[in-house]
Length: 422
Image (cartoon, rainbow, N blue to C red):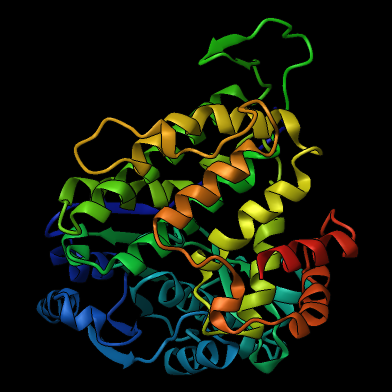
């Protein structure tokens, strides 16, 4: 394993009714004013807004509200939130994000940029320079949609206007995350699968860089597939369990969107999936597929991030399968049975006959399994579903190669992944 430092200071309050403690927790942080940030009408519709506001009012916390955060939020929205909060130099003010990953990302970014703006800094500099921001207005996250894991990490992904640059910044994480999955009961399947695909991709971005231990010649046989011991065994085994949990939870929710147990499992697995635990000892991970997808939804903001990854990720896996053969074989062996279960009709134990044909030991096997799974879940066959065309490819390649975290793939290989993903 590579050397690492793990520190995640987010306090997670998980379960029914936890939002009743929002006001008291804000007060305990020494705050008497907040900017409450939301997207559309979802927070009001599911009851999170009413519960949160009642708690704030009972604690005597004053509030300003900023609404209208869209999917794939842009820098202009972040600056609008930051302006509502002010510089924070006078103290006593925090931010409450009430929504999914886009709302939480925009709020974290606004909290981190507020002190920088007071100093006259370029608001895009933390994104372009990849310099972590260490100061922020306190942020509280109320999650009503699972997938991004934004409620449990110090990352914020923002698009820079019409340039198509969709980049991330490192910033302080939320002080507290409130996760009550009763707000997610009955969530439409398209939103559930978008979040599930996103959560899986986060775990995969780390798992694909695992390496077999050089001294381990003997493996553990599992379903006729040699499963060597990896240097990062503890982390990879944990990641595989998270992937199986996400797949099984999503499959149950596809059959019943009101399955509370599955909704809770998906919420927790999604949060842990990008909390830092999944990358311990694996270095920075890959994140090449995210760079490719950020190019797509940066250029076309209407494209849903998770479902676009469901298209791109298997194509990227095919492109790099030979480069990362041991990790790819391991992932395929770990997921084959769970994917077979997900492809089965409700009530059946599994449907191996629905699995893709071919060599089960081929490095490309994991890509085939994921494509079969995402297709079964209703993901589009290609990016053209959202209007992405061949004419976009040169700009997409350029945006992907401009990503602040350098890609290992040469431009011609990036282009090949985009063409295969159309």
